[in-house]
Image 1 (spheres, rainbow, N blue to C red):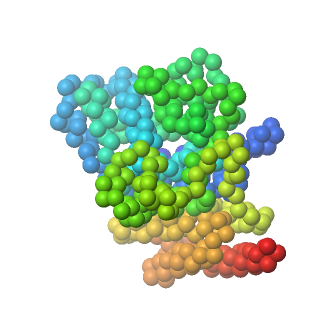
Image 2: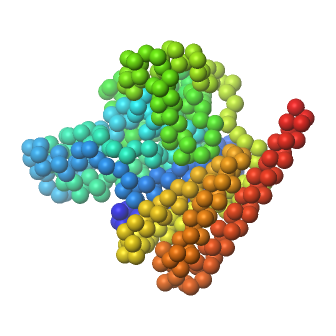
Image 3: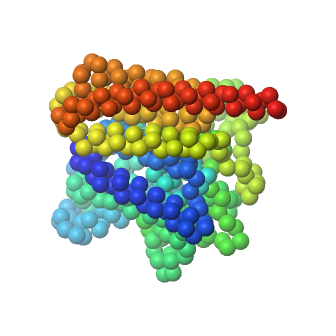
Length: 426
């Protein structure tokens, strides 16, 4: 937990600089692939994901260590070869987990967030799931376990394998020659994120593309079929926490409403997107049929809202940076504090992305978040031990909570008046 937090303190600024660099490069080249609110939504998804991971809010049904203890046929030595084997084994497992996430209804909920952006850029790579509580696919690391690859090696290689999937989420790199035959390139991954009929459910590889070629899921990017990004049932929100659970909620409602008892059970294991016939007829869901004439989700946003949204995400980044850098000291104060802190982070993201959606209930979530923050300061006389750095930090944090409530209320009232005028004209 603490080690991963330290790693993220280095990785997060690097990813943010690359995301902003791509934005500037797109403006310079006259090919902008980044929209501001979409980028903030993607970064916010990254915040929730890394917070969940650092707090360890998931349970492995079968641990890799158990597989090694029970099934190892040999034990490879801790050498460079061991790390290479671990990397390939992780990529093999990643291909199959990725494929199952796409092809079955229940597992799609864990992956919908990654495909929810209707843009394709480095920021959307940060859209990662928070909905997985039970990790059940460790079994795909069986080849590594049979070879006795130590769990510590897997623990070191896993974040490297994940970070290595960041760079190819871009439209600014074209074909890469002979590398197209070996590794996943931006061209391959553009196909994967596309909703064109020709491209759906293709190119599941994470680092190596040959898995797709071997298992029949490869598709080349076609010059006459420009990729269109997103999901066929658009999410229509900037709120990443909502996105993480909307497919699950749809399945729960469908299972409840269908009159067919067989459908109540099989909906979970049917191909992704399948719905009971009676429910689909009675409760239709918008689906994109003509990808080349789809309208991207957007909300009316003033320059001041764009600026305020950046203020809010910057504050969220500062808050989680303090958490990741001080997990041990915070745990020393109280073992439950890091989870209270995590709740605060999630409430922060929920509140300001609701405001980006022009949802009037954004003020409710903002008040809940800021009330929690002020209660923490009043009860402990501190902000999770930050007074050790400066006695003024708690006052600055408290002032931010008050300001954030006032500004959010102002925006909600402003949006309500604007919407009233639009309705009156209509």
